[in-house]
Length: 426
Ligand code: C2E
Ligand code: MG
Ligand code: MG
Image 1 (cartoon, protein in one colour):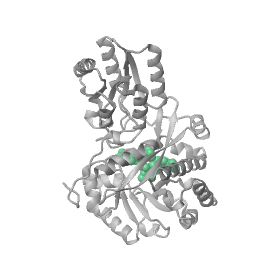
Image 2 (cartoon, rainbow, N blue to C red):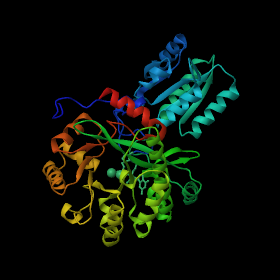
Image 3 (tube, rainbow, N blue to C red):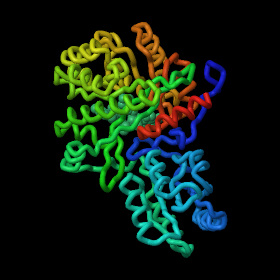
Image 4 (cartoon, rainbow, N blue to C red):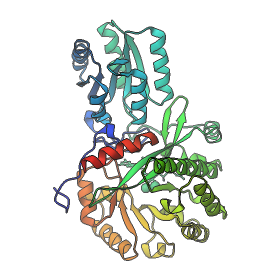
């Protein structure tokens, strides 16, 4: 199948912030990994003999293996397709800590086994860094190691392989969540949105992440509801906006103007001065409110219609863009939403999935797109994971796409290199 422009969307490599085949690429993302995910092993090792030896052992344990001998080839790997990474801490031109940083920035979910000839304390330090950066360390081996040691780790890594949809979202204590928000253990990752016909990147969505001391980097789905329940959402909103303004200011200094969308909880819609405060904060970072879009979920709008109208209209007056998120999960019609000056509508992933699988009403989807266009809103297809999703979004007339097919969310420092890679191939 091809897009209406006649060619297919390109799949970016994982290292470019690109996608895996699979949905469940970050913990605790909510969809199922494909069957091959738990079976692939990436060996990052420059010594061909050791690489081959590890490969033989792993293949006997039922893994499909690939070897990456240096940082450059590692960059080209689709990390999301591996369930285990074996990393030699000494590679040509790069050290293991840099690779650990890279794997963490890529939100690598594979089990990590460190291998090195250096002293045990150094390996332990590298293990600690990896854990603190949110990687799932299975263990470490000092060269020369016995094949049974490696086998033991490979089997262990399988038992604790990627979370599946059945994996419960980790239960965080209120204290853990409170501490994370109050002590600034909240980070922001960015996921690009791409213009469907030109493939130009038209902005990024800021997504909150929590750095948990034991569980590593947690995606928003694991903690936002609890943050709301604890009455801390205003603090989190403030943190995320502040970070987004700052990052946007930095990208601007580096010559890259970037629109940023920020998710907004309906609970933050009680504070009438918020549009003024955020405008002032944007200006202190040298960025214009018009570069920012406030995303609010369709379902939440029904809870606070009047207050939402007041605050969102004021955001619009200050220059911020407004977007309806997760459209299709609530029960509102576009006519009901039309009274708020939204400029963008994001079709929920389940909506797109349902239509692709033939279980959802394609006709409803297509008339929603049509109506949104009549109301002068841009339509974004969310959760685009496959070429089929992309093709459907194009057939429906969506303007923009966002999802793992283009890129998973990434750490701020990865964005500019990712953009370069994406545009140089476009
Ligand atoms: P959302 O705004 O609809 O964001 C999209 C979510 O889908 C993100 O999950 C993203 O990582 C995930 N995603 C993106 N592309 C794909 C894909 O192709 N396949 C699949 N399976 N998932 C994809 P995340 O980061 O866990 O966020 C979940 C929700 O939490 C967000 O949904 C948003 O409603 C909320 N959220 C995130 N950050 C914030 C924040 O800073 N403040 C508030 N109030 N809510 C936030
Ligand atoms: Mg959103
Ligand atoms: Mg959404």
